[in-house]
Image (tube, rainbow, N blue to C red):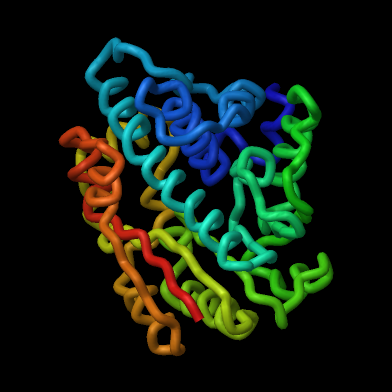
Length: 293
């Protein structure tokens, strides 16, 4: 039995976190890579997923593998780079407190150059953070963070704000919040509650960044998306919520935030990258939303 199987890293939401890590690894090793994440490949190797996930540029051996490759090798680097730069801009603006909601296997604490004095809170389930810390601990240099990294081991369905406070979060200080790849996993009422909690705990000068897929139902209905999900062994229809919901940017704007929205395709083009047809169809409509208070 895989040593991490007990917390479901190789199925359900755990497997989707591995797919995201694999995508970051692929982009890291591309000639035109937009990011550098030396830890992502380690996470995939440690988990030993039942269906091998590509972590480096390869020539696909089958149509199904080609679809998986296309979905992982273009969009993930663009998304990651955009939110990396969000934190960099926040630091240059004087923000010294950051929160990553549903941090998953993200290793920004270790790989980004944080402004001196920055405290970063990673919020996720206890077993997720334990797995990540174990793998990071085995990396060269022990995966030392470049900021004051504080893990907040709590499910977002529970009292995560209380747990965040208990880890030393200061609601009077400007904060940079990130919800990357998170909102489709929440029903509409949970999205509303999450954004409301962020709003209530954000001092003037705070910033929010989130990924808005705009129409997750379209992805779920796409035959290629279903084939890839089936191939890696996860039923995305059970994990993602395609219910009608307010636009998250509009929800923040209604609370007084100043919103900026940019399309993923345009972001990619700005870095000289063009999505392949499948990635364009599935993720090209996604928006990256940032908000300031």
